[in-house]
Image (cartoon, rainbow, N blue to C red; front, side, top):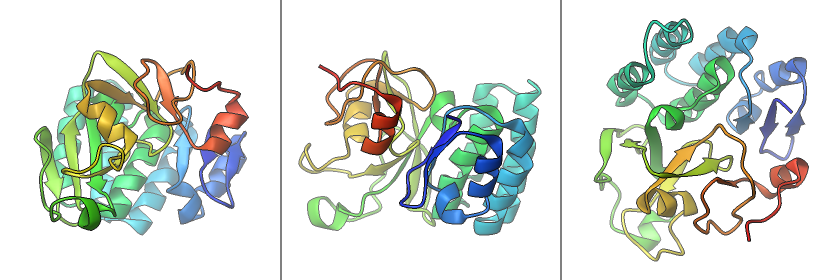
Length: 226
């Protein structure tokens, strides 16, 4: 399986032509969980991002990603260049960027040290008013209501649930906060690449586990974490 589209019209994507067709539908593109890079579709992925997002931001990050693939720039340098453009991104940009990076280079910003938090729809019910910046934020975007935060930790959780775009609540009941925010706060490194040993369905702290949609976990045959 190359990818999985977490969408009613999606599901397992097992070959390149199927992935290419998914890139032609915005709803499928923005719901992709990508398991390995397909460099031949790099241009198409970034073109779709430019169509639904901010074109010059997509074009700039296309150039930086190409440099990254050619090892002209490092993980840190790519993340810094993304951070410089982050305040111009809207909501479609942050979703599309992760998919374009994964298809092109096999990474998301999580894998190079930057987790994206987006405003949780529950903010107005359970937390302070929107606009509160996480303490470990590198930069923010008012257009996307999103923050790029430092991602590091001694333990790892694999994010096949939000694909490195995690709903964020400044405060609130720990059981209302998204499990990935809770694990980030507990010192976990959030990754989108790796081989998990089990699925943490309730977000319980388990090093090396994955958070994944139920349909994907079933397809992969991953057992629940003990």
